Amino acid sequence: MKNIVLTGDRPTGKLHLGHFVGSLMQRVEMQNSGKYDEIYIEIADSQATTDNADNIEKIRQNVIEVALDYLACGIDPNKTTIYLQSQVPELCELTFYYLNLVTLSRLQRNPTVKQEIKMRGFETSIPTGFLTYPVSQAADITAFNANIIPVGDDQLPMIEQTREIVRSFNSMYGETLVEPKAVLPENETCCRLPGLDGKAKMSKSLGNCIYLSDSPEEIKRKVMGMYTDPNHLKVEDPGETKNNPVFIYLEAFAKDEHFEKYLPEYKNLEELKAHYERGGLGDMKVKKFLNDVLQEILEPIRTRREEYQKKIPEVYQILFDGSKKAQSVAAETTAKVKNAMGINYFEDTDLINEQAKKFSE
Ligand code: TRP
Image (cartoon, rainbow, N blue to C red; front, side, top):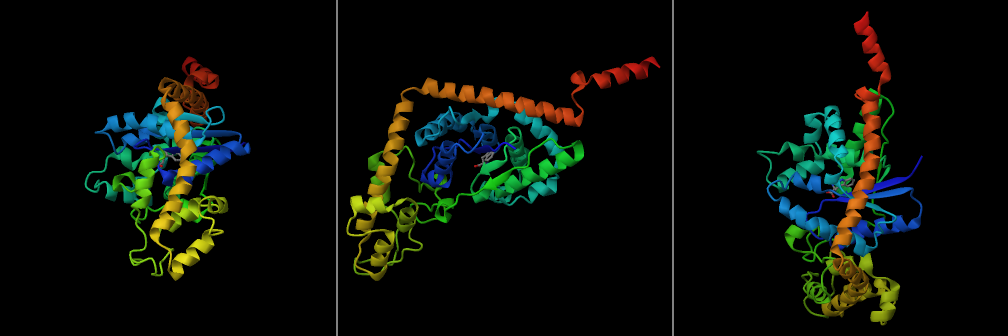
């Protein structure tokens, strides 16, 4: 069996550090490992319409931002197919048939959808497109025969839904679709980077993110303003590192080489943490170090982004080419699906002959 990787993002904003550690880094690694037969990344603009129907302009503006962020991080369109969901109409077609395999109550039980409904205040009037987006996500995945889906843990219910659809399709119409598996980021801290304000998650709506496209000055300003241990008032005070976002970020990003380069009094993060915990280490010094580390990591990404920003039509061309390629694969799967269901009338000569015979008798 081929190893086919697929994942995606809704284009509702620029990508931030949370996306970087949670998924982008892993995607680039997978891409460059040479271990996978095919890799697809979907810009899920159609899915984004399910809760932005009144603001399509937001999606229109952010498609290119997300594409630039991918390219900036090192996603190589020669190795990874980047495509736009809306430009692959077969995905809608598959969704329509899969909808018959899922009950309303099953969709209403999906924990991610439930939480999103609450967050968006949809409780009293849920758009059906929104409620059914997990089914469309099953189309995204199965259209490419993808078996490896690198995602954050919030997406596990979507992958489970896809697996259920695959199983019921295959048992109803015969082995046709491939059952996918979710792959979570290896490192715990990477699963969910807290916001600059210490809130559980970096999120655009909370305004607590460092964006991959932030300027060096913005990064510095944001790091220097980060929430730390509120009880660590004076330098001498012992501080807490556990729920302290500055240390959580260092956990995710700082390597021993960074200490050697920027903070040689300490060998590694363990030593720095120990000092902070026993007291005598000020927040400023730790934040300065974090700033140095982040600047070093983000600089090449920002530079590459700026290069692509100079050739926007070329970036749209990359998306066009990726979408064309994706469409041809999705069309093959859709043909298989319709064949399995027996709704491929014009290719089915047996059916035509059988009907001809029936009416001539
Ligand atoms: N639902 C995903 C998110 O909100 C985006 C997405 C769309 C996706 N299609 C996908 C993820 C297919 C993995 C596979 O982040």
